[in-house]
Image 1 (cartoon, rainbow, N blue to C red):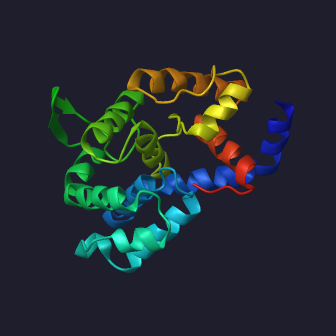
Image 2 (image 1 turned 180 degrees about the horizontal axis):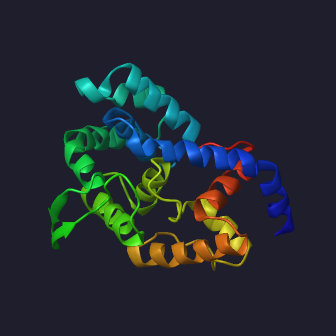
Length: 225
C-alpha cells in the first residue's frame, strides 16, 4: 500500500489536472460529448490511446455530421470487434439527441415507466448519476456498466463511480477488496464490486476517479483517460 501512496505523491498533481480537464467538459459541445462516447464504446478490450486516436480521426472526417460508415476507420485503427462497434456507433449516433436529452435532464420513458433524470449540467447527488448510468446501459448498444461509468467520469459528471475492467479488478484482488476476478459482471455484481472499489479509494484517501487514474498510470506509466 505504501508503494501506491508513494506513486500518488509522484502522479497526484497530474491526476488532479486531468480531472479538472474532465470537469470542464460539463459545458462541452454536442460534438465533443459525442466523440467522448465513441471513445468509450471503442475502448472495450482495445487500447485507450488507440481508441482516442480513432475518435479524433472520426472527428476530422466529420462522422458526427455526415454519419458515414465508421468501419474502415476502426479497422485501420486496429479497434477490436470493429464490425460490431461500427454498428454500435451508427446506432448511437442516430439516437444521440435522446442521449443528450437524458444528460441535460429531460424526462425519458423506458421499460420501467417514466423517470425524471435531473442532470442540468451538474451532478445533483448519486441518484441522478446512477439513473443516467442505468439509462445508458439499458438504451445504448455497446455501453455496459463500465462504459457508462467511464463516459460519465470523462465528461465531468462524477468522480464517484468505478470503471471496473480486469486491470482494476486485479488490483482490487491484490489489495484484498475483491475475491478473484469474475468471468462476467451482472448488474448486482458490478454494483457490489463498485462499493468495494469505493472503500478501497477511501482507504487510500482518494476519490474513486483518482484511484482509477492512478492504477492505470501505474500500469502504463502515464495518466490518460
